[in-house]
Length: 207
Image (cartoon, rainbow, N blue to C red; front, side):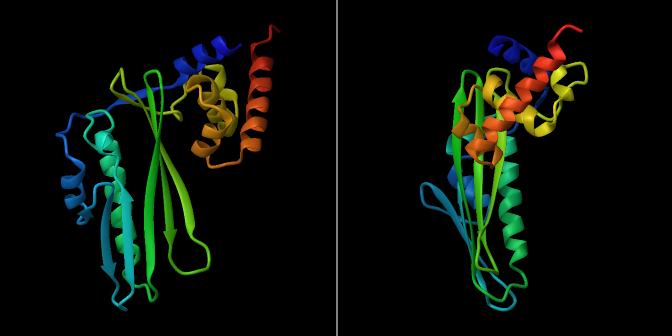
């Protein structure tokens, strides 16, 4: 079943090429963001019209921003993130912060970069978000899990279950790693995997 799953998901995961772009080291990229590089984080701050200061700290994966496969996507994401955090502070009355960290998962030719956004503005609780980008490093392409063809049985499985099956059987991630990528609990990953496998078995059974 695992081998069949891998074959089906590989056929389903459509990939798009990235345009070739010049390398940009982390320090110079941090300069493009308008920040100061300390060896791991790019620091910046912005003051609102009401004198509220927002501290911005983003971790930059040096090897990924310099890589021709991952670089264009990662640089565009970080540019957008920092600009959004800057713009959101324009009318703030209280000090705030935005911090981004990342973790990289590798399996065979696949590389997944997971970015955690920790954004604290007004209110008692920070806002957390996860952004995930997956690449086939051998092919030099970004993997788009949403671009599943209708001819593949996985296309008939609900998106949450389908994403879980892709991570568990195509990317070969364990339950904990899949939970991080999906932004859910380990128990949810297990239940979605079980439901997805059951649905796939029903579709593959002879009539």
